[in-house]
Amino acid sequence: MVARQRGVGMSSSKVLEQLRGKHVLVTGTTGFLGKVVLEKLIRAVPDIGGVHLLIRGNGRHSDARSRFLDEIATSSVFDRLRQENGEAFEIFLEERLHCVTGEMTQHGFGLQPEAFRKLADSIDAVINSAASVNFREELDKALTINTLCLENIAGLARQNPELAVIHVSTCYVNGMNSGQITESVIKPAGDDIPRSPAGYYEIEELIRVLNDSIADVRSRYSGKMLERKLVDLGIREANRYGWSDTYTFTKWLGEQLLMKALDGRALTIVRPSIIESALEEPAPGWIEGVKVADAIILAYAREKVTVFPGKRSGIIDVIPVDLVTNAIILAVAEALGEPAQQRVYQCCSGSSNPVSLGEFIDHLMAEAKSNYAAYEQLFRRQPVKPFIAVNRTVFDALVGGARIPLSMMQRMMRQLGMLGKERDLKVLRNLDTTRSLATIFGFYTAPDYIFRNDELLALASRTGEVDKALFPVDARQIDWAVYLRKIHLAGLNRYALNTKSKPRQHSSRARKQAA
Image 1 (cartoon, rainbow, N blue to C red):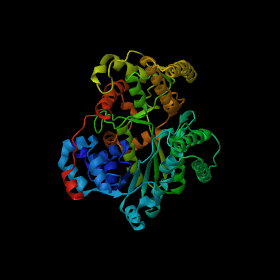
Image 2: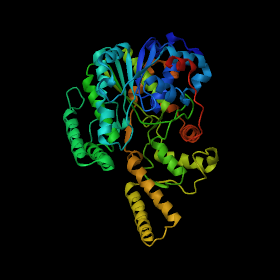
Image 3: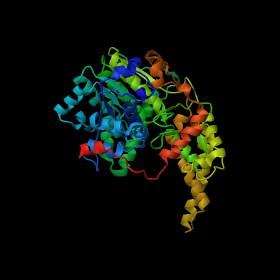
Image 4: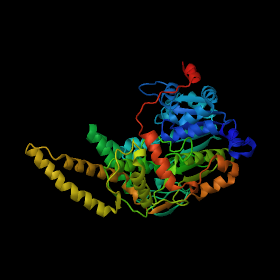
């Protein structure tokens, strides 16, 4: 649709030519990135053979098609498609959008063996964007979703040796390594893990040890205490091997599992940095939910946080979701057209167009000062206090030193049958919010690493000027002042924080088909 509207012929685009007639399976389309990938495939690759979605049923919807129509097709991510060519969009959903009811974490997606084989044989590529992005997930859940269930992706490739596998990971599998981080296999910064001659790390014994530890915790605790202990176990094991949280640890493990299982096959790992709102597509600022940087932005906007641990000179590696989507599509086209091999691409901004934490904060405060009223969902009033980044030692001293006397005063007044002053209680709650956010995100605001994306930029150059325009991945096009102040904050206000209900826009053709 897009290619033809811009007057770009199929023969002039290597990517569109490579994807002509191909069938692509996408996982994770109930999530933020997955939706944008789906939208771009439908809108920008008009001659794609078909898109297949793996979606699990839930309490409201027993099958994938009905859940897609109710929870995904109604998303504002498709507004542009509906406005530009609503009829073509509906026809695509009816004729070339195939929903598969399955569960990532079950063996063979929970499908019958014949159905699994049929799925594998019917697709040319798979884009796996399904993941748990909870930084403090219980270890058993994170290990299942981010690592172990990738055996199902490998199973598709074993059934279909020609299958191109694109796995979405994260730049932060880097863990606690410092310096220039290249597009390669990451060495753990902590305890040793054996490495194979092929380059990946042998994780079978480590996973066995982790599962034994999980079983031990389960045998001794239950209920909420069990959940807390499994979270603590995940953080402890992640730290031991060189990661700050369970999410990045299990994503690294997932990379190793796939690299071993698909040794000699077509596997591309795409590692985005911190994915935030769209720069341009499907609409400037489009976002779903509150992401990593947004939790801190929102806490400052609501005047819950005024000080945070961080290094003002440190690079906050933020990348718009549409650039990540384009990197994934370029990777699919390359994997379909080139000899089978394993590749790693990092989609990031830190090496080509860096923005520091200090600049990030300054842009936020400047917009809050000059234009807060334009973001009625974000700012309830103009923040009166600055947002200050300090080193971790100073932060701990400030927050701990302020919290102890306030907490003691609150307990004493309760014992005397008196309510604490509302102002003191609010300060105490804000300190708790600050400390909680710092526990989860503090590692990301004091970076001493730079993610390189030289290989991704080289891939974009090889595709040619037409595809560089259709599928841009270069972060040098970002004007950070404009993006952070006018695009991203507006997107948070309009999409992520707007609680006004929007009429559901079901596809009439697809609805009839589902019935």
